[in-house]
Amino acid sequence: MSPLHFSFYSAFTFSSLGLAFHRTHLISALLCLESMMLSMFIPLSIWPVENQTPSFTLVPILMLAFSACEAGTGLAMLVASTRTHGSDHLHNLNLLQC
Image (cartoon, rainbow, N blue to C red; front, side, top):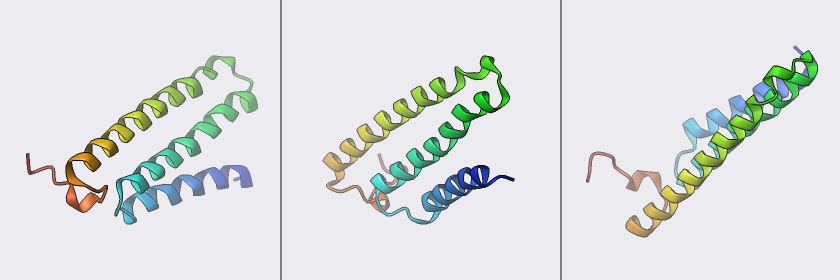
């Protein structure tokens, strides 16, 4: 395994561990999700260049579009929860209460 691949794998692992263990604020969870998407976007954009396959050059663009949609939805949820609950703490959000 090359050091470049190891750094991408470790970035994804650290961001998923941050999402799993550091869940106090919604903004920190959103940042961990964005770092996961970034750590998947960079290898997907380098992979077609390394393998010289032009058929997979559209995949990083689609991933970036989904990442932008995820970020917009997450920020909308952040604003809505801050307006209704007064803070972005995740322990205040309960899916069982309507």
